[in-house]
Image 1 (cartoon, helix red, strand yellow):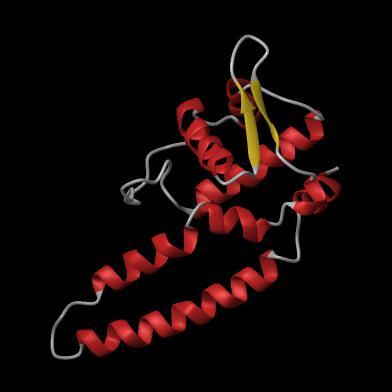
Image 2 (cartoon, rainbow, N blue to C red; image 1 turned 90 degrees about the vertical axis):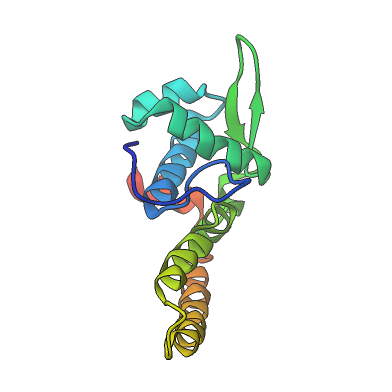
Length: 150
């Protein structure tokens, strides 16, 4: 994964971007198709992405109990639950995608004569956007993505 201009929030394991979200979905689909545990280096090679960046994403998903990991020679990552119970909304939420978008948009609204009101308006609209986004993403699971890519 190439560097991007997104900022990294303190305490977050990986930068939250749509690119991160896409890589997370692709990694979970690859794990499901592999039907078992898989080292992060193998997943990164399969996705043609940077292993370090992918490990950050996988660690975040592990912290959120979407993935589990085993260290050692026979180690690797595997899904913590069935692919049909992992929704895209769960992944999106785990990666804090909406928060990153909201923070970046609200950072631009300055505290000028109209800035405070503008921040409130933007915040309200972004809340609606997140609600709509999560509604759509809840309708799709990793199993759906596997089926659609076969």
